[in-house]
Length: 217
Image (tube, rainbow, N blue to C red; front, side, top):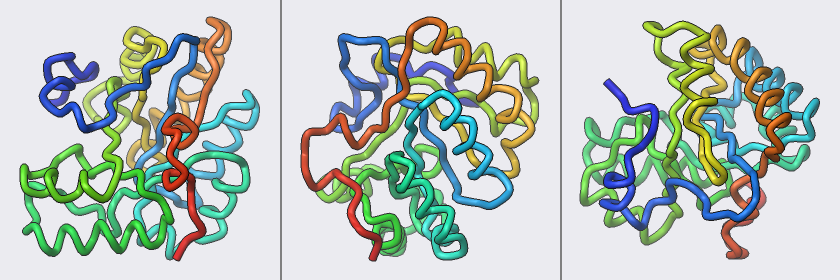
């Protein structure tokens, strides 16, 4: 069970998380979790390039370790990167200290203080600690591309029916999501472009020099 559109009351419960971007223009923030992997991420980059679109990739540290050339390409093409832990740990199922170490290990590989917890799951004490060191980025639109029980058409509607200016949208550059992503992403880029939207990277929104993607450790 998951919510496609994050309700305002949930966003208000966690005001220190970034759920969306306040903007006066028609721009949207496409994000991609779980990569980089050679089977999917280069295709995503190709789709974005065709619309001069920039996104944000919340990368699993172990995938950066395995595929450094793809990670380098993401940054060279002007996209933002963020940390998605090193091993894709679920915060609810992981003790705090091992989780903190895994987040830090992921941050060392990504070189970013942007952080998105896998599954959006953090315990209260994890939240309290991590928000002192990282900018925690959630979302207000969840595409559902990971869900085997919905059709590609439903996934597309999840995005197009819920996007508003400033929305942060979640996709996954993963094998599990590729079937739906290959259908949805080109159509989202085309439709929203025709509606006058631009696609921006998140790092440019925070006006804090340390948010800028640093050289990977």
